[in-house]
Image (tube, rainbow, N blue to C red; front, top):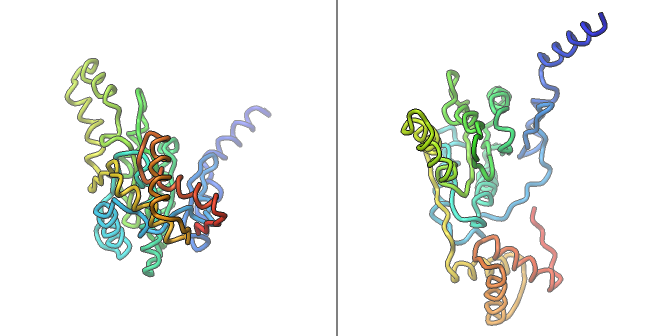
Length: 281
């Protein structure tokens, strides 16, 4: 008898609405989606840089900004896939664009969804659909590996199934891969599937469901130095330009890479050595 009651209680608990799934959306401008139990957790302070400091990606930056402005105004807008080189500001530009649009007077919320929580995206969309504001649903570093079936959950965001994607939600994702799937995974499908063409098409076409593809490519040395000079000007760090150039190039050489992330890491080190505090709010 006790075991039966326990099973009944557990079944009712699973059927019950998830506690805290719909928060006070006026409490913050950004939220993070968590599962078990489902809930949207407000972010008190978003970690981001100013849009004007994102150098070397002006075209993609302006395209995403225009798309986000359209969406915030209630006009048609596309889901966007930001793909390409590591450390070139893909996630930074999403957060900076969100801040810029809010500063223009639009009550636009940012909701971050972790890749591993994609199977719960249908429940998240149900919560957002009923909310009185508009949302950028953001998934950072999106990619899929061998035997990973979570990519099918993504179609609920991009296509929306029978109900369609909520009018008040647009989806932005970043990835190092243009097609989200590793090349060897696609090749394996060609070699093992009963109908190789259809198996490959299902996976490659996932990225085709994004209306915007915005590419991020490795930066030149001039752009790398311009990023650092921009940070110095914005945060009041003063250093002789010849010395700045020499130290920045040496830093880049030790990292074996040149990107916006490397430029920021050098600047943080420089600001720390000069005793300059950084207000990133």
